Length: 91
Image 1 (cartoon, rainbow, N blue to C red):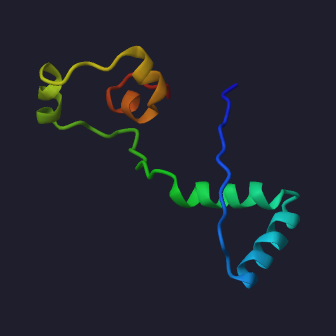
Image 2: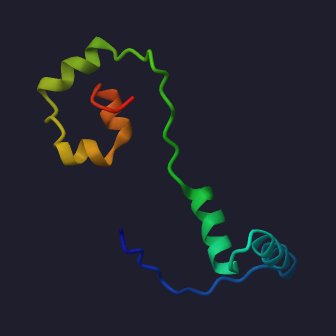
């Protein structure tokens, strides 16, 4: 299991927003910290477009395979999108 390192910080909120966040945290049986972390994580997550199963890679992109080094198995394991694009991802 991966260890998550957290950094303590101080953030100022408008009182009405903080009260609503406390209410939503309580509704979800979460601490205020856990709730805010979840909300912020969702807001800043990287957007990775979903490719259709029948997505075809342009031949010119495939031609780059001789120029760009092939990814390592570790890189493919860590990047589902890359594995999918290269046709090495699980279905």
